[in-house]
Image 1 (spheres, one colour):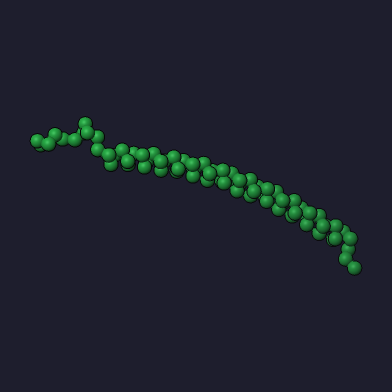
Image 2 (image 1 turned 30 degrees about the vertical axis):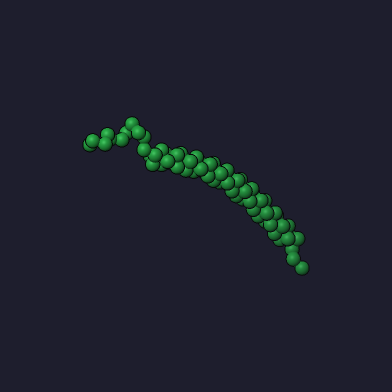
Length: 73
């Protein structure tokens, strides 16, 4: 029959491991949440930059009549 002290020590060790795992799980969950918020912010910035780039490209593609050389050149 196992020694009760050994059983108590094993239970204490298991409880300690569960506590550590719970803590690690919470830390990982917080990190995933932080990264998801960062990804969302970066996607929003990318969307804004894409819009600005497309707007800039469209303006460059449309010639401004003041920038054209006169026909005699």
